[in-house]
Length: 468
Image (cartoon, rainbow, N blue to C red):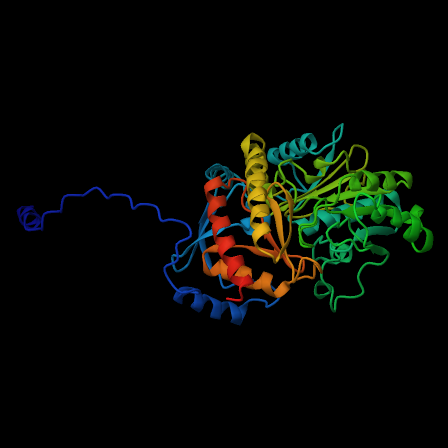
C-alpha cells in the first residue's frame, strides 16, 4: 500500500480544466478548399468504382452533415442549401424536434411489417392525413416508401375500382421511375429509353403551360383550349372516355420545369373528369406538404381530387409515401395491394412531427418568404435579359432561362453553367425542365437566407450572361 501511495504521489499533477469558448458560427456559405476538396475527391473515386452510374449527380458535392439550410461537406466547406434534398427536408436538415421523435421511436420499435400488424403511429398518421387532405368525410390512406410507390398505388387503385384500362397523363409530367409510374411520366425520353414496352393505354396530352403554349394561343382569350381539346380531339378520335380510369396530374409540374397552370385550368379539368366518371388523381409528391403555402398545391384552386399522392417532404427525409383516397373509393380487399416497409414506425413518427411543424408555422413561412423571393426575382428579371420567366407558388419557384425573350427558346447550357457556378460560390441549386433553375429551400428558410441566395444568384446570372 505504501508503495502504491508513493507511486501515486510522483504523478504529474493534472492541469486545471479551462473552459472552452465556443467558436463563433461561420458565415454560410464558407468555402475552405477548392471544390471538390481532397477528401471529396477520394470518395468520388470510390463512388465511380462501386456505385451505379445511373444516378443524376449535378456537381461533386460529398455531404457530411446538415443543419437547417446549411450543408457541410467532408472537407468542412459550408453551403447554403436551396434544394432541400429535392424538396424532401421540409423542416430543414436534422430539425431537433424530428430528430428527437426518431430517436424516441428507434428505442421502442423500428419495424414490424406495417401491412401485417397494427401500431399507433400509422393509424394516427392516416387519421391526420384524412383531416388535412381536402374534401369531406373519412378518407383512407395507403402508406408506402416513396413518391413513385404512392403513384403506383393510385394507378392500381384507379384500375381496380373503375375496372377501366386507360389513363390520361401530361407531357412534362414526372411521376416516378418504376414501370407503372414511368408509364405515366412524360418528362424526358432518356427516362424511358430501353425500358419499353411500358404499361399500355396511357395517353399523354399537353399541360396548361401559358409561357410556352403548345397551341400558340394566349390566356385568357384561349378559353382554356388545352383542356377542351382533350375531349374535342383525343376523346373523339383516339381515347374512348368511358374506358379512362384516371387523369393523373401534378398541380405544379416539378421535373417538368415548375410550371403553374393558369386560373380555371384545374376546375375545367375536374369538370371534364366528372362528365365521364373519370377519377382525378393529383400527384403532390413535390408540391405538397406546405411547400406552396397551402398543405396541398391543388388547394390554390377550387378542386377536390379523388386521390392524392404524397411523399418527399412528408417525413423530413425518412422514406415515406402516402396515397389518400376520398371516402368510398379505397374498397379493395385484403391482399390486393400491400407493402413490407410502408408506414414504418420511424417514418410515421417523423411524419407526425413534420406535420405538426408544417401546420404550426412553416406553411405560413412558405407563403411569406416565397412571396419575398418572387418579388425580388422579378426585379432581378428586369435587369437580366436571359431570365425569360419567373413562376411558382410559395417556396416552389422556377427561373426559366432563355436564349432570347422573343423566341423563348430553352437555354439549357446557360442554366447548367449557372447551377455549377452557384455551387462554386456555395449555393446549392438544382435544375428542372429543359432550362429552369428551381428554388425549393426548406420551409424554415429565413429572409436573411433568402437575401444571401438572391445575392449569389444575381452575381451568377450576370456572370453567365456576360459569358464569364
